[in-house]
Image 1 (cartoon, rainbow, N blue to C red):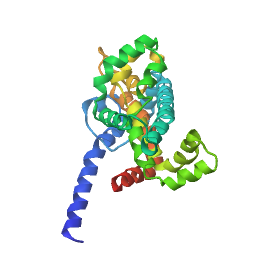
Image 2 (image 1 turned 180 degrees about the vertical axis):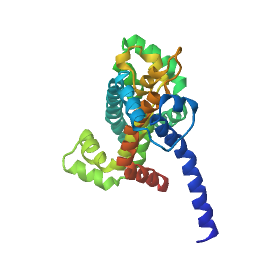
Image 3 (image 1 turned 90 degrees about the horizontal axis):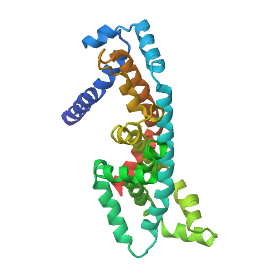
Image 4 (image 1 turned 30 degrees about the vertical axis):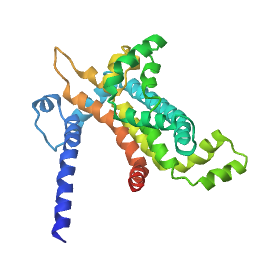
Length: 272
């Protein structure tokens, strides 16, 4: 094996250990008795009774199943709206010439550069004016139109041959039919990437939900995990880590299911 390959694999191994260590620590803490978890001592000996108690406390001690359901509702609705609004916009930018097209495209690029925190105050007042604060609408609306989704679909749509679109028009397909029957089905890898980015972003979002909702029944998973903090008794590390494992598991599963298309979509975008 060449020295360059050894160096590359060594860097990869060290990076993997650094990235995976917090997750491994989280899982091990969720399997320990409370006193051992609080001490920070790590052991590979699994205490099955303590693990069962921790996970049972995570599920029954708070409304964790409800928090997970809220996360599914928020992510599903947000992703559906991003594709619903993003696909026609991306197609218009990629394959039609209309007045102001360059301006709209520039606005999409600018929106990609803006941190979400910059828009918190206007979004809060918008939700207040619409009367949707402390509702699912307040949690879904800010992510309904995604510059990232529009940009990724735009990158794919602009590579579709014009001949294919002209053939679809000759077959009698209109604008909307071409978008949903031709363009979107051809964009499955990038849709997988959008799905992963949306699910991870919305599932892990704590900042905006802490502003937009106050009802326990509407809290997403990250806010639900905070329920294991106790100002008087301290943090319950075992149930807290168990709850964190349970809230992280859907993200890991989602990525494992879509990882090939996720990686292919970014590799294809880089090649273009």
